[in-house]
Amino acid sequence: MEYKPVNRTKHIAAWIGLSTAFLYPLSISVKALPALPKLQDETQKSFFRYVQLTEARNSDELHRGEPFFWIDSLRDEEKHQAYAALQSGEIEISKLETQDGGTVIRCPNGIIHHWVGVAYIPGAKLGDVLEVLQDYDHHSTYYAPDVERSKLESRDGDRFRAFLRFRRHKVITVVLDTEHDIHYFRDSPVRAHSRSSAFRISEVENPGEKSEKEKTPGDDSGFLWRMETWWRMEETDGGVYVQSEVVSLTRAIPAGLGWLIEPFVNGIPKETLTFTLRATRLAVAGKLKGKN
Image: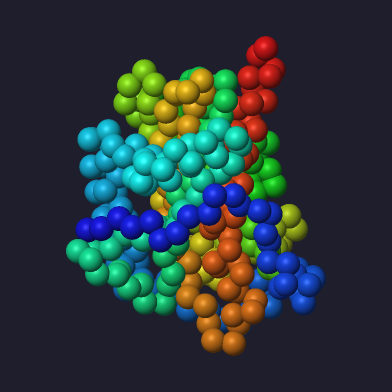
């Protein structure tokens, strides 16, 4: 099993597919798309293998305590530059690829998206970050407009179950009702991590209307079939570094519809991760300001 950063972008601009938006300025309904294939067993099998190997790499790194953040695996000069960029307010983000013994994991009829990003929150304590992340009743405030609704469904110690309604928009608009199982771990007084799995993802048809209803998971447009997340946090350098790593599964891009679906399928995972890290930083900073 290999863990390879494919590339990294030191500063993420607010790029939202301007060329596509110029050509197709109106939001297009998902209902206008042709019938799409259901989530296939072979697609799920490939994704589960990918997640299994990614989980093994995460567990090994956490057990050894290094590299704690993905930027720690860079060469010394690049690592110093990355930390300097983080402390100046930038987001460090990279596309990753987990391989199986040096072999690319093929995913028939699906696309596996794998991104990792780090943000720095000056003046924060580890507890401040955990307070925001675990406040699921208010995620619709912290992470608006990406999160429309949120609710803590249950809690048992450091284990949470939460409901989140996502709204994703890029040429087309997709609304998803999701439920997540999240487990938090305190590794030391200054380090923590969490593991989150979306155990239910349902596309919402006619959201906000009287006719609103959820489609059967896996029998929908395929814009998000699976999502697995790993968070890491460390309090140091007068603040907290926060890393989020996300592996998600979407349908493959059908022939003839690339102009419509490709910007959403390939653009949303990276943009959503960047937004989530920035929103987390803003939410924690807002809490700190209120306390002071």
